[in-house]
Image 1 (cartoon, one colour):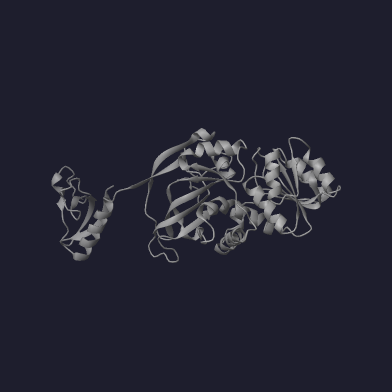
Image 2 (cartoon, rainbow, N blue to C red; image 1 turned 30 degrees about the vertical axis):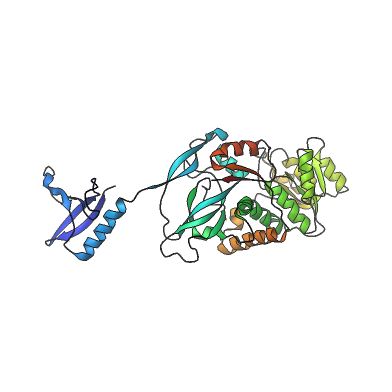
Length: 398
């Protein structure tokens, strides 16, 4: 790309365009110069080779600029979405990757977490800011470059991130340095990648959105899923009685291993009736519902007076609108939280991630990375997750 510069030479003002040399025989400090101030547009003598020798300071700046223009572009592989749709719209492509700017780092991804939010963006339920785009909200990688003047990060650091900016389905990526957290040596990178988004989601759900305490009874939908399994473990560790819904006997067994005291196979029995039976008609303090449309109304029915309905996903579709009057008979609370609003400051991010990693290291949280796919096979990973063929966490390996 040509560059415009302003300059003075022989006491006259000149507007110059500097064009990198096309020949390998030409020095990098030599380049085409077109004097745009020359009014004779047909006079091609204004286009010539030029090696700056006038002012050492200007010459150094021009040589640096010219050298920068001929640097090779780094290409990496990434998954790209050019149109909304099924898993087949995930394309394996080459993309350009620049150098980190001020406040940024470049990381080479080691493992990438797969989450249902990636499917929402792929289908257009949530709107990406650009098109095409690379999905992915979670990854762990090694720092390979840092932006100018950046402190606190260095090449070789192992870091993790979850949330914005989207785009982790790539071999390498540029990230804001203040959005990543260090991964402690006690947690391996694949485990960290599988738990960052899901673990921090579980943390704010049980610790801040509704603070689970000993003696509470909670209902967790999709109890054998990535977030659901962590919710069961964490709520159980906090002393709550945990009721979970699952789709199969195999998932029911896993949920019980994860601290779920009562596993309901919703395909075989009505979960509302079963919750009512388990709680002796009292209901539960909180429902954590990531399923959405298929479970929403039933979830409201399971709550005790002044109970909390926490809808944090919609794997079965967006729930139908609920009139405020529907909450009135039991004075219910309804919230649709997002992790981004619970980790909006650097301190909140570090505290949330730190508690997740500490619970993994201590054994409070057991992470099941049951499914690993090559990054190039992200479409298959999406298909399996969307069709409930997975349990625990799913990761992509570049």
